[in-house]
Every structure is written in structure tokens, then in C-alpha cells.
Length: 217
Ligand SMILES: Nc1nc2c(ncn2[C@@H]2O[C@H](COP(=O)(O)OP(=O)(O)OP(=O)(O)O)[C@@H](O)[C@H]2O)c(=O)[nH]1
Ligand SMILES: [Mg+2]
Image 1: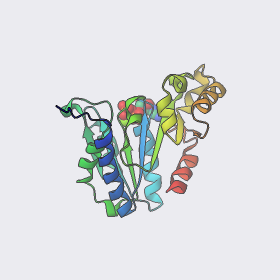
Image 2 (image 1 turned 180 degrees about the vertical axis):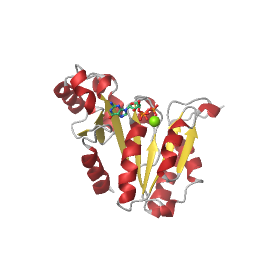
Image 3 (image 1 turned 90 degrees about the vertical axis):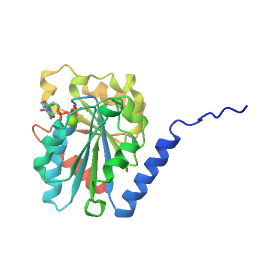
């Protein structure tokens, strides 16, 4: 008797991601998957970024990933853009968004009217890096409070992403973080990675981040 073996556990996931990507491409939607540990500042950055994009006439939407709750979506709702909350708790509490969840969220979005779709992935520095969702770019955030050793200890996230936003720069004077060491640790893992220091609190680096977004689109 021949026993079927699923050789690529990601096969099905990637097939759905490709369908997502085809839908994004068909409608000219630029999709950015933002990933980080819990609390690095993803939602806060979106709260600062989206109003500026809106003021420039660029329409945005967000798929908000969390294990549980609609708290982050509630923070983004006042921006007046489409926000879809994707919770994994009812399906076992996955620590990352899957391409099937993005596909489910697309049913609630009018893609032709969206220019940039942000996917805020579930806060986790490991699992989200493993899954392609159909996005155009993967961006990660590392807050200064997390330490210089994270690129060495959690390399996949740093390898997979094109940009590392170093967040909470305003806290630098209060921390013992060695920024040169952190940057060199990032470069050892991914020498092509673009490092953008930002502070959502003071606005430092926000323009460089917006320039990157607009240019990449
Ligand atoms: N000092 C400082 N605090 C910040 C900054 N950005 C975010 N925070 C704070 O960090 C905390 C977490 O921010 P969030 O934006 O909720 O982080 P998140 O990555 O979306 O968190 P999860 O969705 O739970 O993974 C909040 O208390 C923010 O006010 C910053 O630039 N400087
Ligand atoms: Mg958040």
C-alpha cells in the first residue's frame, strides 16, 4: 500500500498566497506585511503613517492580525479606512497570520479602491517570518528595548524582511543599547537589509519610512 506523504507542508499555504498576490496585482494594490515581537510599535506606526498617506491622496487599508481581541482595529478605525480584524483564537490560536486568513479578509475589502494594504501580523519574532501571504514587501520592526542580540537569536525574520524599522528611538538615551553592535548584528544576518531608525513618538525617521513606502510602490 502506498502511503501519501505531504512533502511540502507549505505547498497549500503558498498556493493560496499566490492567489492573494494575483488578486493584489490585478487591482494594483501594494501590500506590506509588517512583523515584529509583541509591542514593538506596529499599530502605533500605522496610526502615524496612514494619515500622512491619506493626506497625500493614497488610499490605505489594514488587515489587523491578533490572536484575540479587536483592540488594534479599534485604534485604527478612527482613521476612516477599511480595517479588517483577523483573529486566530477561534482556529487554535496560531501565532502568525496564514494566507487563508488573508484570503478570507479579502472578501471584506474593495481592492480596486485600495492603493496600499498593510497587514499587521501577529506579534511574534519567529513564526510570521515563515509564511508568505502574497505580500509585495516584508517589513520588520525591532524596538530598542529588545536588545542587540535579536538578529543573531532570531535570524529568519531578519533574513526574510527587506527593511528593519528600529523603533522607539526616543528611548535610546534611557537604555544601554549599543546601536552600532545592533546594526552590525543585523548586517551579519542580512547584509542587504535597509535599517530605518524611527520614533512614532517624536516623528524621527517617519519621512524616511514614508519615502521608502512610496518609492517601493
Ligand atoms: N516611547 C515610545 N513608545 C512607543 C513608540 N511606539 C509605540 N510605543 C508604545 O509601545 C507600546 C506598544 O505599541 P503598539 O503599537 O501597540 O505595538 P504593537 O507592535 O502593535 O503590539 P502588538 O500588536 O501587541 O504586537 C504602546 O504603549 C505604545 O505607546 C515609540 O516610538 N516610542
Ligand atoms: Mg498592534
